[in-house]
Length: 194
Image 1 (cartoon, rainbow, N blue to C red):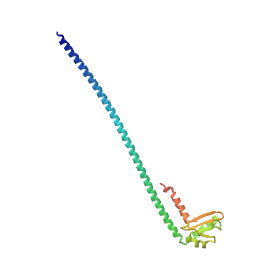
Image 2: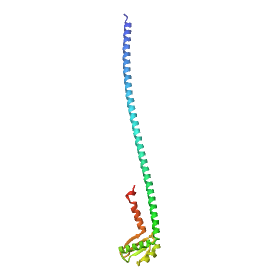
Image 3: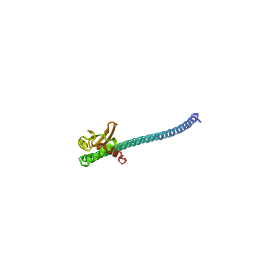
């Protein structure tokens, strides 16, 4: 046999063996690359999923915060409106009472009220106390007592104040003070609080 043919045959088998081994290594490397690519794709997908979930949670928290702020603002506005309305009603109510008290100062019962107020003042401060009265009531009060009478511009509705200058004592029995006290007590009632 011819040596060239034998060498050629061996060379062909050797090439075939090398090609087969190279194909197997290529297939194995391709499989590994695909696995790594799939693993990288899965990792990338998981990362993207975590990022998307984090973004959704952040948006959810932002939305919850916005809603909480809006609810708080609405609650504040509602409370403010209720308080303003309540204050308006209270002011109107006490304006009506002040009007009724003004009408009362023009009646005959008002003289009895002034007389009992003078007696209270004399009982608290003594017979020699100075009586302060609204300018419109000075003549009425003079007719009811022998004490010194002075006009007081701070008394607008009616009633009297009394003072003992030597002892430094003062008593406010005016309708103005009584109305202011009642208004303060009225606003402090638990039923009227929000």
